[in-house]
Image (cartoon, rainbow over all chains, first blue to last red; front, side):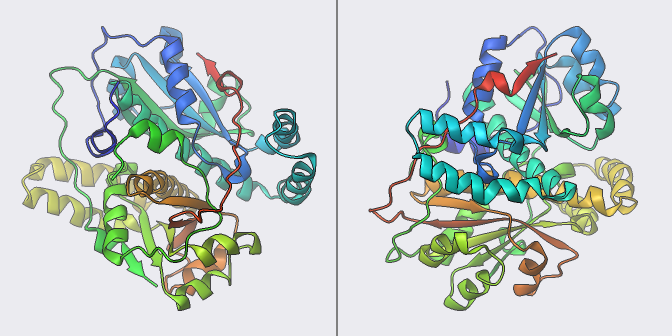
Amino acid sequence: MNNDFKDIMQNRKSIRHYDSSVKISGDELLEIINESISAPSACNLQSWHFVIVDTPEGKKKLHDFLMPFNYPQVDTAPATIMVFGNTKSYLKYRDLWNGMVEEKKVTPEARDAAVNTFLPLYEKADRQMLVADAMVDASLVAMQLMLVAREHGYETNPMAGYDASKAAAEFGLDPEQYIPVMAISIGKPDPSEVVPDTVRYDVKDVTEFA
Amino acid sequence: MNNDFKDIMQNRKSIRHYDSSVKISGDELLEIINESISAPSACNLQSWHFVIVDTPEGKKKLHDFLMPFNYPQVDTAPATIMVFGNTKSYLKYRDLWNGMVEEKKVTPEARDAAVNTFLPLYEKADRQMLVADAMVDASLVAMQLMLVAREHGYETNPMAGYDASKAAAEFGLDPEQYIPVMAISIGKPDPSEVVPDTVRYDVKDVTEFA
């Protein structure tokens, strides 16, 4: 396990060709997701949902909505993790707080204050707000997931821009509730893979003081 | 500097009261952002933009659009970093690739292939796609920013859900181009701050295999 923060963050690169002979167990993939969900989320609603695609049948489905440009990643990687935003996470909000009361992490009064303040905001929210919240939450956890993958010795490739309307339904999820935010291939790089350096705009070009 | 990945990621908590006597220099804030922008982005468009709010005048502006619930964070933190998504980042796409050619990171042919493939997609994109891309990019970099802050010994609090229409204009930015994704307060915690543990749903409740 790599625990070097600077290395994990600064040397992450997007890998297009993986070593197909190196598999990742379902348990390890769950562990990687479990570490990633320490990410913060709006009102702690955790509006994310994951589909681990690691079977031949599952990988075939990825071709139905990803761009051909992405086929090398998903065909060679031992797994691709679909990260969805969950636009109806607020339906579990009361349960979440009841659980915290049971675990004595909050008082019943704190639960009631939070539920009475925030739940109505979500119950009254329009679709645009629910989608925005879900996209941000899912992106935050996706970023952690790419870093945790490197902790575990793997590399990733984040993919977006595919036919979003198909992705949820392909995996039996309600497309109204689950919006695809990112597909992340994960595995060991093919040893012959040469990954080009990318550049970033100067920090001063994208930052102002106020 | 803390370089312990596990500690940085797993012990991050949202801080509501900061030690106002501990300032952070503009240079260090720029350095924190500079480390964070190693985040990936759609087509490397880096659709993010930052406003570092660390003056009394700037902090006053935050009250105009943040929720009163967020005032303790922004009033006590030495700085709040506004993370915006930039919906017009593609206008710089040609310059980005020209720069990579100049630095001999890619060939002119690779530049032409990328620009001719991806730039038209953005030029033809509707606002919904441009906003979605900008929100995801800005969220990815925001997550890294919260982690890099901990590397530097600071804590953060991510805030959303405020009056998005006002945030850009308050800081002289075009609200059509720049969409507010997150405000992140940063500083040393007030020593008397007691941060409650939050809980997460079991990983198996939010993950499926396919």
